Length: 77
Image (tube, rainbow, N blue to C red):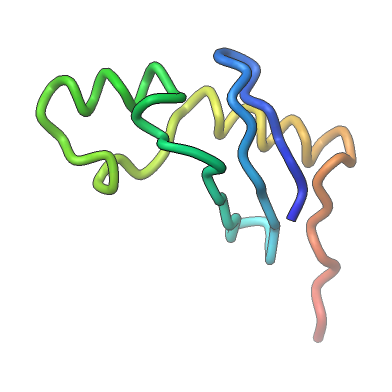
């Protein structure tokens, strides 16, 4: 797993790509305390475990893939 920092809030998560569509994200702390977007959802009454993603973090992960900081494995026939 590789660290990826959110371009919006700076929070760092660990990520691994298994395919172009499959990304594993491991939060290194309490997501609701670290991510302002998830914190807003929790403040609105949602459980943090029910918030599937942060759009800003998703953008940062996609950028890490484009820049080669996070690799997607080659397809295996």
